[in-house]
Length: 150
Image 1 (cartoon, rainbow, N blue to C red):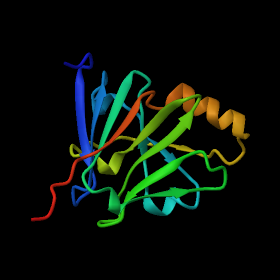
Image 2: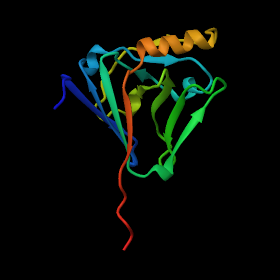
Image 3: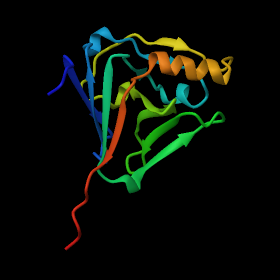
Image 4: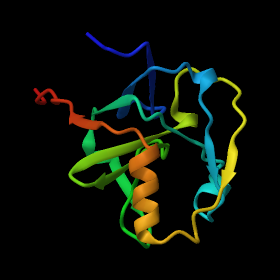
């Protein structure tokens, strides 16, 4: 039983990575962030989070999941290697796994205005503090059990 009002489903197109985002906000109530870095901007990536939520990721075939990591090595931008979708972002901080949802990976699509953001001038400490204050505070990643080939 969930203590959250909404459950937002998402994942990659081929189904290797799927998630259930338990949240107290509807999608229409959320404000995505559009990072302006040279990785995110060309992809049109928009990120969503809520501080009172939980993200449960299920890897149906972890062989195809890979992380893109940048210079600070503090966040993993998780992609499906089969369909090349960017699905979610994770960051370990103070013993917790924090997360972001990539708006384009949501099953339900709504038009949301994204605020542009540029984090290049942040110190590492400022970046981690911002994530701890604003990202999804509970990220759980589970690998699904694959059936043995017969």
